[in-house]
Length: 224
Image (cartoon, rainbow, N blue to C red; front, side, top):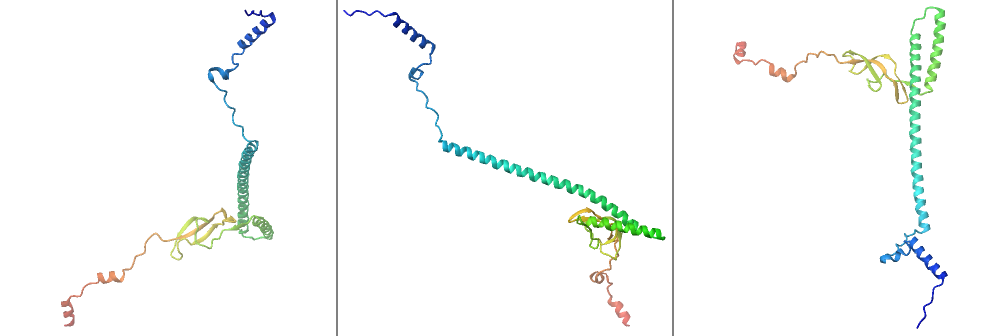
């Protein structure tokens, strides 16, 4: 008969430690429980392909940022130009108003030497002011052409048959433009057709229709 070996105290202690470790780690060997298999790890991209993908994304972001920056600069410049032109238009309007006053002063009659000297000074001031305005490309609006609502403003209409309707008869206030932009319309008086219609003479056809018929008896009487 085979003799049973008696476990030594050290062996019994090792068995107890193994049982405790298995009780504390219930997830041990989960891959073998109920026939479940460990999922495969995710596919890892090639480092070169991953770097190229990130490069393309960064380059696309750079292009978008560059386009946004260009649009912002363009809109900012447009707003600045608009503000500058608006301010210049206001300033030039005030200068043109002063030019009108100087022109009105030069139209006043001069009777004394002192007034003549004053007129000379006004004329010099007017010429200097006009020279400054010309540097801003200021030019008078033409009033020798037929009335144009884009350039002229009619303040009165005179009925006449001497001129075609729309002809400018008198310039009340000069107009000015800067390049192609109108700063101030020219105030003018224009010719208009008379409101009353002229009596129309009958045409040749109407005269024949309305002519009295000659009776044959009357003709015979006349011959007799």
